[in-house]
Image 1 (cartoon, rainbow, N blue to C red):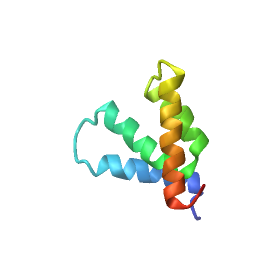
Image 2: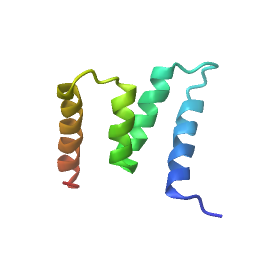
Image 3: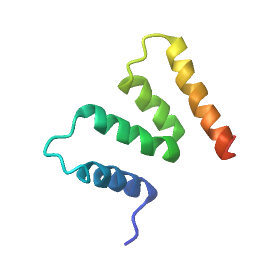
Length: 79
């Protein structure tokens, strides 16, 4: 059976992390890999994950992340 898009995203994350060939993968690498795939898959999930993962301490930092995401979308023609 075909995988759902969500399952494919998680499979890609797992594949990327396994391809590092490291016995132990730093949590920072895991977080960055998850963010890389979430950004294209589900932008709301990306922002939610980023807000926890990056531990935004103020609204300004959070807004910078949103602005970066919005600029990225405009460059891709999604905005």
